[in-house]
Image 1 (cartoon, rainbow, N blue to C red):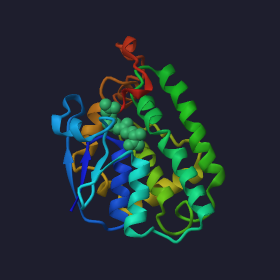
Image 2: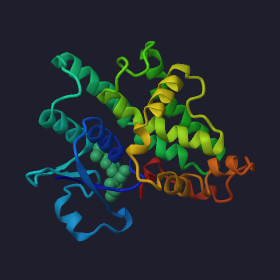
Image 3: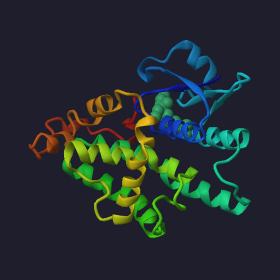
Length: 236
Ligand SMILES: N[C@@H](CCC(=O)N[C@@H](CS)C(=O)NCC(=O)O)C(=O)O
């Protein structure tokens, strides 16, 4: 059986799980701690990052883009596409995945000014999607495609933040909000994260952050604004 090496909060892993689950490919999952990577993982993972996928013939794959393409090649694509359509889907998927880390950085901001600056940058991605979305439930129609799966981590995490803190990172993007609602209603989000995801995620992004202060009704600057870290603080 396929094995996915994972970390509980990782958006890149969530995307790969979205592809596996949508395509109904059986897999097992092993979680590791990125703060204490086991030696067996360092021995097989070329860049020391999750996701790593071990195929049925024990080939080790890394980089989520490559893994998603492999799953299409090996297990039949979700839909038949021309090379041009494939290229478009990859481009729209990339518009999401290149913002996974910026979203983590935004959510981890320690003060209002940093949060708003980072959110303004992240919002450029949502604005592009807003312009592109039509009237269908999902990105390309009434079915979940690879593009929806790529955007799932961004939209799911925005939903958790909104539910917990009241801050809507999708404010001003009504079509993206409807898309998010359709993805949530599909049931896919919670299938692509561990059962304790909301607790783990909240412990990371809703503790000692600007969003935590909003959630707790403080709405002031975080006392530790000096620890504002770079956007890459995600997942570590
Ligand atoms: N480009 C990689 C990024 C994966 C990534 O950044 N994974 C993070 C967790 S979300 C990680 O493993 N970080 C640990 C590290 O960089 O040492 C992909 O698409 O798979």
